[in-house]
Image 1 (tube, rainbow, N blue to C red):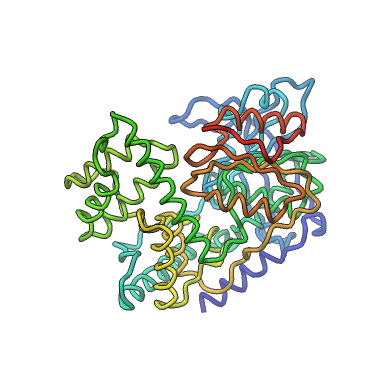
Image 2: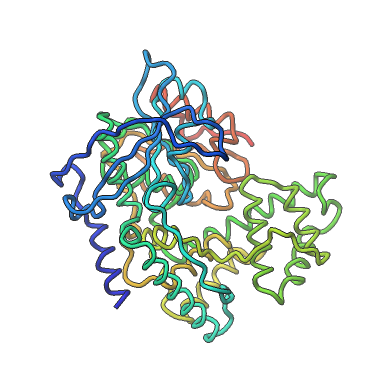
Length: 464
């Protein structure tokens, strides 16, 4: 019964009308001083609340409150408009980022009001939070009984999480968030928006460009999600990306005397670390997850030290079970992608493909964890995967590192091929996740595009 009700509710979300067609209009955002946070420095901006329909299929029904933040352009005489930013996750507090946008260059802050909002279920916007469901089974089951135990566990986890977080849990997919973004544009009274999305925030940008491309002034998508990815590519591409990043680490370690594994066979040390932790899946998955997260930076020195410690039987204190029970991912990722695995035979084939494409890291704990978290979700996704259709949007700038362990470079290439007429792909030849904060070259190109609408050529890249 749960699956039927959930599927019905979520299917409606994906077919909601455009905001302008609903007959609903937002109230202007009332800006005020931001709430005090003893753990953070005083913000430079201001905060507000936007009320939007809970269900865009019933725009005059119940509403929910979304937290919004703004940092006004420091050169108001030459203001270009609003730059809305989403740092991804899903689950990042973009409203908090907007009020102190230190990531952005002074030139961008001078010309734009930087605005962010906490998408549904995150930050101060109807935060989705789930209780622990006890010790989870191994998320890499080796037989039918193990798969059934994992599926049963996750079905209960999803049901409990949903029950604790109704009604927003059923209305948190990214297509719904894109309609909220359009409501925010209208509430701000802006004719168009510029947008910077990083990681999962790139999907919000894509969805908005599909729905409201004529309202986009400029858009930068950094470390892109490929919404056309099916389950096999979702797992396989990320497994291959994790292995590619590991090979970059091995090359760095071979040439860096301070690496804890310098002078050793890095791959043999990694195999030994995996063997040491093989008897306790929570430890091994925690080790793999720690190494993958270090690759985001990348923090190669920590990768080397963690592997050396694990191979010697000294597991890092922070190595924890990597299985992804993060509640917002169950409410969002499982409705943006069709990650439904129907049975053990399908799982076995998919996992074999993960291992074929990522034999060193044994797959990606990120992609695998998200797919396993979705075992408990039934019915089709509310926001099903599809090829990008942004024919009404202006030229969009895509940034991606060549060696990204989380959003594979293959996804950026795929996105560019889906919309070659109005996307430009700028490749940073480095390693790690998120290009804008790392590469001066890429940041300069992105800033120039945001300020002047001049995009770089496709054949121009940025060195590592």
